[in-house]
Length: 446
Image 1 (tube, rainbow, N blue to C red):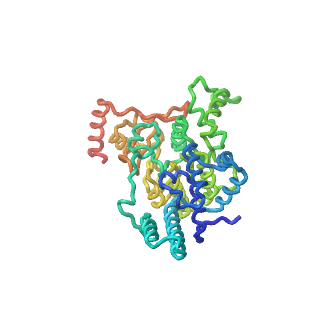
Image 2: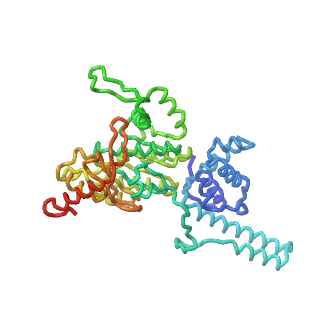
Image 3: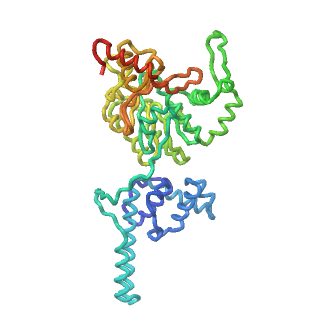
């Protein structure tokens, strides 16, 4: 079946709109679709009513609620022929209004010609039609076209200082997370995922460097208390052990998160960004609104810089068009000198990627910093209110539309593979570090 990517026939405008409402029912909150402009008023009103009651639309739900199940299935499959873009909905709705005015005017002219109505009635009806608001801004907006969001929707990592700096993670935005290998990117992402799951927010997770089994175990272990875990010693070396939740705990988590957690099957042969976005779209139809891609350089062809820019742009559009959160993990490019602290220019090797991200955060471990880096980063961490000697890790906000770009000190729990925020500087530490950094090398490091 050849899918229709755009509409040229006026008679298909309504079909395009109905397809868009089915795939993106949330547009009914943004646009008041009046049924007088639609021929198929019943289907429009059914979509609106079902979405209002259930919070989503999909084929099984519509078929289940329909009186004629086969007819409903055929109708939905016909709508699925259209490739729709949410951002185009408003302009197509304006075209539908224009078509309605044109058709109704032609009907009035025909009635006037056959004397079914008099001229006064004709002019009154035409005047009423002309009062229908039609936008024709040619890409220009006035202040009346723009609605300011009453409340911005956000999620939180539960690391309070990081959440303050970012002002939370906003829906509709793409956040980029980076750091050199084995510095804690995945740990931080899984921790954020756990916070979402605890609130029964639906999430999608792509873990390119872990099997599905490894990812699930890592996730569940971080949700357990010590008494809920089994520590399985290696048969050849009793200093080596594996940690896993007890079976009854696994069963419990499986039960409560079965409809909240969706994991990408990275054993699929088609590992392109196109297939990833298709899978994310399937998750979207399940009600998922928080996506983790760890890391996007596991996708085919992502080693090419121009392809990386395209991939990030596609994920950015996915977040914006569907009003969801996309967390993208990226490895830094190889730098001339091995260093732990990254700049925007170190991430994926191109400024274009940084420009497409609302937030950029990097993660560092303190135990493998060189003396020079530890001194410089220690001072920056001090300026952010933390003591590097009390930190196992650091997350640095290097770009945000939130409150500020600073560092946050972290403490790592080895047993549960989670971070918590390091204590802020005490008054004694503050005085001591002020003296240390004011005298170091006879100059300040800033």
